[in-house]
Length: 368
Image: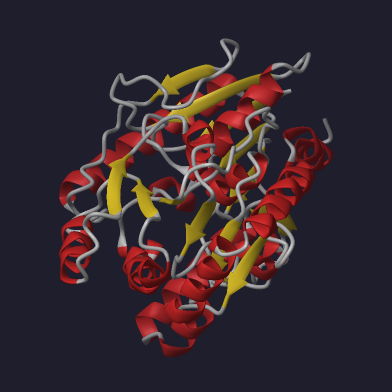
């Protein structure tokens, strides 16, 4: 069987890229399976996550100008080149399966150049807001949604990461398969008075809410620190740093940048904190469970509740309630035995997302 993963790049840190690497490495080890990753803008850079040497990487060298609209003249020309190169490559390789894990120009033409391949779309983002957007859409907006629905009906399967997200698929071809994670021997030692958060420094990650919560935590636990990992996105970090200075928390909250070895870093912390506006199925929470790091998360739509077992390996706080979130952290700080128990449970509960377990669901879908 020949499987193609079709994406934009694999040189930047991200949940899609991490999960893709896990899947292709699993399949590459199987007999009679060939795996390809086809990119549009790898730009000669090395993959961010380690790939099995049997995974074949092909870059189409399209290089969209991401600073401009997709519909700028420059990018429309690149889209036509993308279409021609991609169509020719698919004809040459004749894959059995094409998997598209993100949204790109080719979302709209993949069903028409797939040949006899099984075509699968993965949804890694939450569509929680979409029903309201559909209801309030203009006539042009409604037509766009109708076009999207028709295009998605041409895919063989729309793979979503949890049951809540399946409700937003209107085309009757939704399949629920969570993200996998490779089991690890790493285990947090729970010795440092530190809480960790991670993600791109963007508004959707809600780090402003986390800083608001930490203002309360600091009053009860002034010797505890909050460390935030991730790439900068626009001016968000500057705005957050101004908020930190306003609350005089610069001695206890710091940005640590992006790192390659998140699971190893996690072993140095006592708690993981998530205050996102929405999350579909955050890989970082799987990584936290995997090393036994208890989680305090907003019960935001729709991912965390499908990963965290509330009160057992973490706590789900009322969505966007910084005071309640802070109180949960304070409660755990004041009860180290509870943190220890949650850590043990987290390690055990992560097994249900193990690569072997999840990839068997993929194998069943592909008739492998």
